[in-house]
Picture 1 (cartoon, helix red, strand yellow):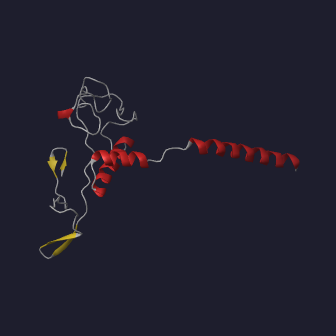
Picture 2: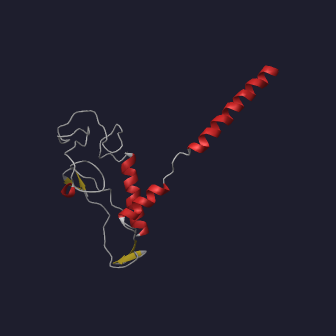
Picture 3: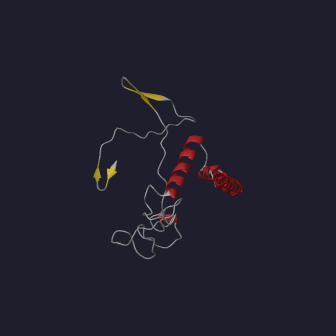
Length: 157
């Protein structure tokens, strides 16, 4: 693993199997080592900072990963962070970004279900929980009725 410019030793190894399903474990010497799927980080373009493609196939304009302004790179930028993907107050490469988390979930779905990126993306987007506006209005009305009832009870005592 690389941290900045220095290589750091880890206990992880990425293996590729020519099998339809991953084995539960592998034998290395006298060790029985469990196998789990590798879920890559989301692909982010270093030119436009959007997810899903690389700089080589990008048709977008050069965008700063720190401040989201066009025309400069992030190395020398000292502006306040602003994410181009979600408009949050963090950089485009932040792992706390909701869009990064969504893309990571797409990658996990793709690997775990053994489907294409496009299928995984549409599956994740349809499974996302969206606020139900039909439920919110009746709940507000019930809350208002409870407040009126409680204030009315106090009035009668």
